Amino acid sequence: MNHYGRNIGLNYLFVTLSTLNLTHGIWMIYLALRGFSLVELGILEGIYHITSFLMEVPTGAIADLWGRKISRLLGRLVAVLSVAIMFFSSSFLLQALGFIFTALGNNLESGAGDALVYDSLLLDGKQESYIKVAGKQELFYESASIISFIVGGYLAVHSYRAVFYLTMFFYATATVCSLFFKEPEFIKTSNLSKPSSLFCKIASSLKTQNLESLALLKKQGRITFFIVFSESLFCFITVLFFYLQNFWTANGKTEYQIGLVFAANALVTGVTALFAARIERKIGEKGILTFMPLLMVLCLWGVALSEYREFFYVLTGCIGGILVAAIGAYLNRLIPSGQRATILSIQSMAFSFFMILMFPAVGLIGSHWSLELAFVAMAVLASILCIAYLWVFKPFSLPSYKKKEE
Image: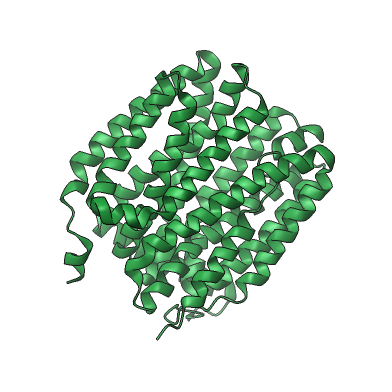
């Protein structure tokens, strides 16, 4: 009997509404117009990543202890507040608080969302369809991203007020949507015992949850290694997204032309994610986990050295769409439900950690030498990590999913 199927459809709607952030492509321009310097903007971005790094595991534990539904609900409420602060405040300190709230909103969603989807499928006995569901979710995400880039840019020319008000409306609607999720029945809600104070109860539960999750990661080093490699690879692609804007602008491309490349990347990411399940049936999980990282590294070299940087960057979206779904399916099968949201949050924490290191390093190389050299350095580092991944992780020798289930 299907008890949790409704969560899957609701999740597509929730992800779409949560991704309709019309400020995503223009917030730096808006704050610069409000009088904030580039240095201040850089500090605000740093505050975001540091907060994200520090709060990923605690927020993941919240989802495991008190429910994925509650975590997602809180995440959207905090997101509405962060957008309101960005629009109305002219104080740097308040903007810093707003960026902290933005990070917290994303943290509360990052582990809880995937955990809610996988647990819903698991309880209905349909966990093998996760890769298909994740592919569809990625399509909704990328479609909403394309709309956000186009509509947000168009509205910003006429009225920033419309951009921010509409974003707050979409986030508020996502909050209402989250109320209709059905919480997986095995979530350990309010299982808090001594000591007496509420704060100590919360701290004690979070500590226990985190220690159990870290013990699992220590015991299963394969999960840890896989998280480190996959998140470093996605970090390289994210850094490219930011610095290619400056690189292409310096080489004569207009914002509209750059936007078309990013829209194409989002489009192919969503489409290929939709067909990830079919691709997996053709080449198998071993094929995806072996060859897709190699192709991603090849694309990084193409962006670094080729004259066809646009083509190779769009191709990263194609490969990334498949990898996101496949990596999610593989990790979720290895992680117990009681620690799922916490460990998926550790995965996001790893991404934030790599961004804190990589983002300023690429900027430093680009400032003192050139962005081309920075792109080459990323390709070299990705190649070394990929060789280590193939040597240590040996994805080509993984047991098949069906054999494991038997």
